[in-house]
Every structure is written in C-alpha cells, then in structure tokens.
Length: 220
Image (cartoon, rainbow, N blue to C red):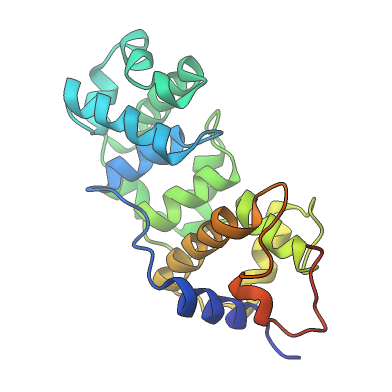
C-alpha cells in the first residue's frame, strides 16, 4: 500500500493543524524542560519552570550556580525532584567542563556523536537525548515516546514493546529527513495520543486515523 508514515502525518496535520511544539523561549529552557518532563506531565513541568523563573532565571548558568537542594525545591512539582535536580546539575557540569558552558559548542557536534555524548550522562535516555537534539540543537532525529508507540501499536503498525531505536529507524526511513517535519510529527503523535488513544477505552470512532487503509485495522 506504499509508505504509511507520510499518510499518517498528513491525516494528523490536516485534522489538528500545526502544534507549535516545543514551547520555550530559549534552547536552554528546552534542555531543562526535556530533563524535567521525564515521568511527569507538561503541566507539572510548567509549574517548575515558573518557579525557577520567579526565583532567578531559566538558564543553565542559574542551574549551575544554584545549590542542588535549593534547585530540588523549585522543581518539586515534577516528581523525583531530588533525582532530577541531580541530573540537571550533572548536565551543566558536563557542559561547563567539556564545552566551557557553551550550548552551541555542544550542539555543533555531529548528530551521532552528540547523541552518544548525551546518552553517556546519568539519567539521560533515548527520548530525553532526542528531545534535546531535535528541539534544542535542531538536528533531525525522530523522538519516540509512549504516545507514538501506543498509537502505532493500536493500528498494528508495531508491537507495543518494540525497541526505541528500531521504531525510530522504521519511521525515519519513510519520513523526509527534515527538522520541522520531525518536530511537528512528534507533537501530532502526542496530540492524537492524548485526545484519542492513551486512555483505558480509546475514542476510536472520531479518531483522524480511522481513515487509514482498512487493511491495517486497529485494535480499538
């Protein structure tokens, strides 16, 4: 039936329109938000970012200078706040030690090397690293998250437990290697997942992906 992932993108984009994701005023804010959003909702991340803003500045320099215990108080809303404050501090320590605190110097690395360096840091996994690479460094990697896996597995396009990198390769093979498309596509998967799919009882009837080829079907 041809390439399915461009079809999915078109169906979602035509239904929802542009999502304008990632909401941030700077690359530094994206990095901080990417680490804070692990295992929590964006609403909780926004509360933490506002707390940081009210007590100083959303910047890696502020993270660097703020004692870990104090930082943990600012990000309490995100859960695992002691762990996340440690991860933020480890990231900025790495940045200051290896790149003199300059995010652009880190982002100037080849995409593969940048990904490997990020993944070498404690607490940064595939999704967090790819969030940083795509939205902050603006390099083309496709971010896979729970929404992506749930939506695609419901339409029998992958197993629910598929390996992160395996699914990433599959989608990237069919999708134009374009930063803006990858950004939008990831946001659209989040949108359809939240609105229709990531529920105990999915709302399949009104889902824009109902229009997929009937040969694919879905589990409902």
